[in-house]
Amino acid sequence: MSDIEKKIDEILTRGVAEVIDKENIKKRLLGGERLRVKYGADPTRPDLHLGHSVGMRKLKVLQELGHHIIFIIGDYTSLIGDPSEKSKARPMMTEEEIEVNAKTYFDQVGKILDVNKVEIKKNSEWFSKMTMADVIKLESKFTIARTLERDDFDKRLKAGTDIGNHEILYPMMQAYDSFILNIDLEVEGNDQKFNCHAGRELQGKMGKPKQDILLVPLLIGLDGKEKMSKSLDNYIGITEEPNSMFGKVMSIPDTSIANYFELCTDVPMDEIKEMEMDIKTEKKNPRDLKIKLAEEIVKIYHRKKEAQKAKDYFVDTFSKKETPENIPEVKVSKDNIKLTEFLVFSGNADSLSDARRKIEQGGVEINNKKETDWQRVLNKKDNGSTLKIGKYGFVKIKF
Image 1: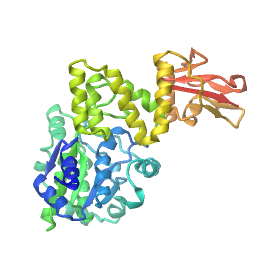
Image 2 (image 1 turned 135 degrees about the horizontal axis):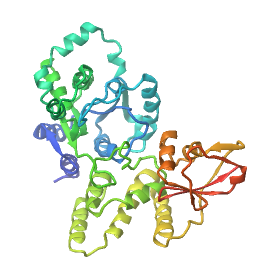
Image 3 (image 1 turned 90 degrees about the vertical axis):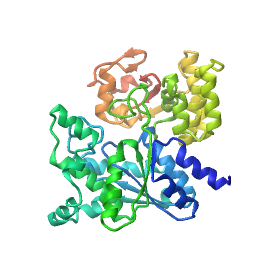
Image 4 (image 1 turned 60 degrees about the vertical axis):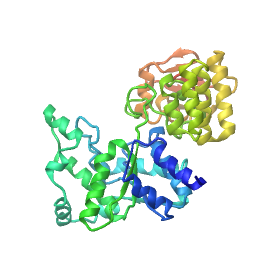
């Protein structure tokens, strides 16, 4: 088997939930076609996490093989909210919220893909120009019966939970993205199977070749139970600072080690299978394998030097239970700052609401004393104070 055949085989087998139509896409990949590959993300939150990276890492390999990657920012689909795996309708977002979140996506995508070779589209480019007549014509290609077959809608109907008319539009809109962009292959998480199938059906009904589909598993979060999600606070952001990223990886349950290696790193599968056996036979300490995993993940997003620093920081701080020697210092140019604002400013919270939650839940200490007053204001009396945020974040404030 040639190197290219091995790479294509890995694309279609490693970290894959399902491929539709596997034989067709394999034939096209081996045949040397330059495929138009689609990946979409709704900017419902400002940050991407490792769960998002699973599909994007597939795009990276396809990009390296010369295929054309189209990354869709679903600014119009975000107005509805994807109903996949939801027990109730998502709150509708404003255009302003969507725009703010979308702006952060471009830099983050560059952590994985060569953005200079990625075609980035917003689906508002076509949906904002559609008339009611266009929507009616498009909706005629779908049936209510077929739409209600999807598991999440079926469960909500049986539970007596409302389904908004706007939610039924979502699969059609995702399908139209594929139709208008002439997509050959759609890469998504396996919760998107219904929506991806809608794309195949629409392309076929409109006389175009049907896209193939590559579905990846949903990455389990830090709790080892639910899928990785910011709303569940069980995530690792791909732009998190190295020490926090390293520490979070170390907190995953032992049962998730092999899964994270497979979905989030480039470590060869034969090595991963050997690690699985070593854990089962207790030949190796899972903690040592997690250190290797954390190094690999931090290296991907922050380079090797930073990964080594994060490892040293973790060992000194949590294994030896010492306060780190080189705590990063954050300078504040004004005379005072709200604690919530400082957590965001220092990179230890994603938003003011996230900072408030961390404080109220007892996750913030100032000079080894827990601080639960989210309205606390830091001033020059706090100059040089050490803040500990969560288990892994340390920072000094300098006025």
